[in-house]
Amino acid sequence: MLAQALGITFAVFLFILCAMLLVLEIFIPSLGLLTVLALVCLAGGIALFFQVSATVGWIGVWTAAVLIPVVWVIVYKILPKTKIGNILELKKVPDARPGIPDQEQLNALVGKTGVVLTPLRPVGMCEVDGKKVVCVSEADFLSQNTTVKVIHVEGNKVTVRKVESV
Image 1 (tube, rainbow, N blue to C red):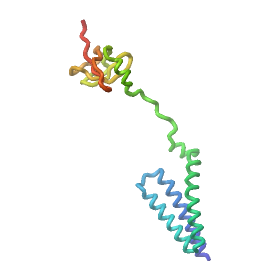
Image 2 (image 1 turned 60 degrees about the vertical axis):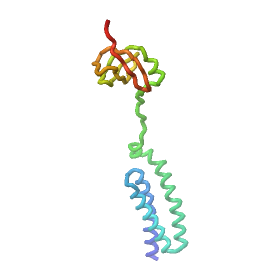
Image 3 (image 1 turned 30 degrees about the vertical axis):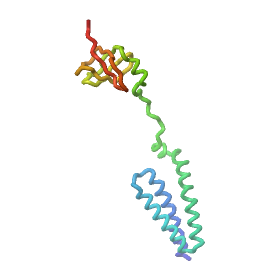
Image 4 (image 1 turned 30 degrees about the horizontal axis):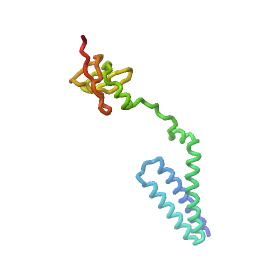
């Protein structure tokens, strides 16, 4: 009788360990090792239950079928409200940065003049019509603060030419 009680106690311990290992698998990158260990604990617990009797074994199987999903639901409901959950959960969305302007906006820049913000070797930043745009120089090198004119737009490639002063 004592051996059966110890077997049942150890089987319950293995079930709890199985549930904990499955939860840890979320947070620790183990390439599935923790899941394999959890499945070994589950199989060991079920085997111990069946050693007591077939009825206890099937009760153990149904307990595992209910226990593991319940533990997952509890973890997902309670964990975000804990101190650790607040650390692990991403709350703030990063600020959106301005991306590449739309094609229509780039096409509207053709013929407009601007100023070189970073040296064009041959690629760099220009400010055209109040917008910062990545530009490609038609010639080799254009230094900073050079006045340029947009001569061509193809896709997101904006080609500029140096404006000769009169």
